Length: 219
Image (tube, rainbow, N blue to C red; front, side, top):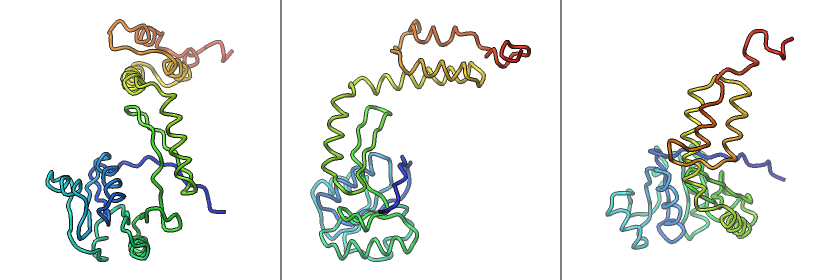
């Protein structure tokens, strides 16, 4: 049995990523990378019209030719998405030899990472992976979670994050502040300056009694 995967959320904004293949699967991976702000290069002799549109919009660089090992140079992430497994395996081998993480789509033994099913609500992201065992199960779980999470979760989380930053700036480190943050995560947070949650958070005494000299817990 292989070792468990390390779940990570990686910042790819501005980072060079390579996708070899411009068919349906390649297009799907390109879109995922673009959503994260990656600098995407595509290598393929031909491809879908949607890929041409992305090139016209200058959202990708498209090298219209077959893959060559030189395409790995300078890349930080590589996805092999051609229709030929042998080509995908060769790309994976070239990338790993160069110390670059790579993924040969739908071929778990030739993957350093997997694309999980993701539930998104604004800044909230829940990733689901079956380590390549059953993408269909991951998709089913994603659908169930999407049904459970209200569409307003994202905006609420953004308001909660803004209030959290105010609390961090206003109160010293301590269990009282931690308790307050945990409580806020269970409450509604609105945009109004008179928001009850905001008033509760910022009217709480600022000094943690355990930080005061002579506090009861020290006696």
